Image (cartoon, rainbow, N blue to C red; front, side):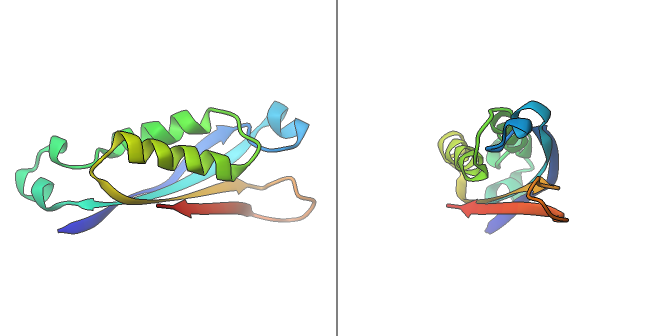
Length: 117
């Protein structure tokens, strides 16, 4: 039984971006993460070891967001690579990284990058 686990609107403060002030001041970010996995065993066993632990997923996001990058694409790729490496039960994953109120000279609520495997 294939299913999805969603982590919605993980709110973080980080210092990503190409501008010098982004490195110094930082910005608010939101991360949405969806992973697809086989949930049949865990839905019957009620055992954490039989599923993808969303605490582990959240930790990967937090650790990778703490590493400064110029591009959001680079952060997304690191998150996906770690999920693929550390959580072999994951069949596919999608990450959406939103920079809230980006400094782009206009009234823009957010800029998003979406990547998946």
